[in-house]
Image (cartoon, rainbow, N blue to C red; front, side):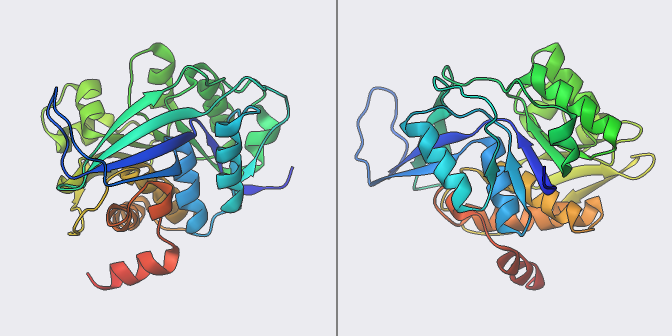
Length: 302
């Protein structure tokens, strides 16, 4: 198997993005201003972000033989992302999401249907060893744990994006990830801390290269170094948000791209924050992923 930069193991989604003038109150009505179908999902969007930034990427999720799976397959392949399909799972479906975007604020509300997803059953050392970095999210936790264990054994860095930590397998991923980037609500639940800075410090473990906590417009707190005692703050870059869909996923993909490009974690965090800020200016998750030239131009202005 040819070597790739980033192997993604997790969820891919089809997002129907519905824009409304303002999010409606319960029991009320509102007009839709636009509807578009785009690719989404934590893992798939992180891969698209990384591919846009120059990485060679591979997706190890399961897709079936149906309209939604074909849409994901075509979207990934359009970005040059290889899809591993060793075994037929015709019944499998990606996640389907309806994303309601409040045009007055750029904030989004996501309604997801996950029941058609099938966990991969063939992620082994051959596939993982043919990558420079492994990306995992919290979907398919039992299989993800095994993938992380193989990656650790092979010395391959692991970047993790966990939006829930509610069972033993996900907590094991939390322990194994060398580059852990959590949203503040999850970090608070995991650590019990009331401040993001303290949560970042609590998430650092011996041997972990970076433990980071992201909190939207408030920025990112991260602990790095051999002891992890120094927690730094990366402010969010000031932009006018049009749609925050996928910002966290783009952050993770851009972090992996910067890391594999030779940047230390503190510089990778800054690069990722810039990529996420640029994505927030565009509608959609994957459609708003910036390329490397755009991120570098944006960073040069600060």
